[in-house]
Image (cartoon, rainbow, N blue to C red):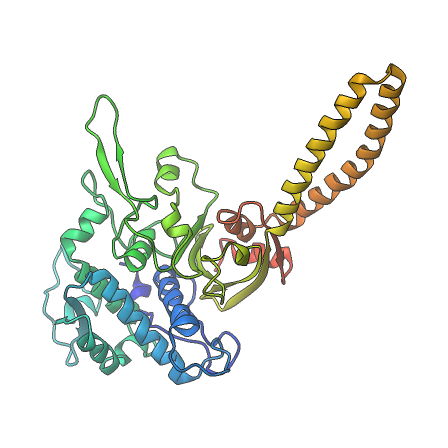
Length: 397
């Protein structure tokens, strides 16, 4: 367990300011968890509040921040419990130690002092979190670790081990090469199962020499989605396990947790009909938010793709018609037509190639590639410089 888990709470930015809806943290192993909670916070603020006013839901008061966090923690634990009981943990108030220090267990000042509580997933859970919220939000408190333990114990240790697909070797949930946390923590909070596989349903993997082994991916459509792009996915086994299915790419709400070059964040749109109406996806806005406190506004324009497809069909039809006319005409007319047409098209084609090359050079950033995993042919316009987009996904904090 990395030390930052014992000192990272759920912390918002200042209320009533830009990005006051966002959780904040330095770059450490809790970022994956915080990004998932951030996604559920946005779901509550944008689509879940009752009695809305004309107030911007993303400019939050302190009460709005508190209510959004409570609602998000409750919803995630209910999802994991699958209508069963929820297990939550809280630290001992008198520093009572329940597990002795030994060669197999090293004290971390939190884990050895925990009380366990079994709760109903309805009113009892919500009341419990409201009453004990201070343990999760106080500065330098182990709020993220307490919630991680609660999530794993609610799922149960045995089911979590099975989710991790650790039949052949131990797969740690928290110790990972990714500086911002484990993918399995993200899938546990997002789908209720700590699976490393992102495909739809169950895939049986094996060959003629071995029995087929089932790999359990995403079993139902996710409420909040997930998008992934990483330059390191070169190994076939890793690439196969990380092939996203439609149940993550097309969630119930237009909110996606993202993993881009090892950096977690959230992409969202305010229109609840975005994924239910084909026309709504023609041209729309997206926000990218990272718990580093950075926000990127972008416009996704799929009209370019539709226009290009229509233009290609029209040019194909024109070319076929011209070919038919040339075949029946004289050799002289054929040469004139062919030469003139080539000269005209070469000029416009050259300009188009230069434009595309310039766009590829200036805008081919990690975030653009991430968005293209969902909208492959979209034209993306950012409100920041490409250098800033590259900076957000560099390897430094």
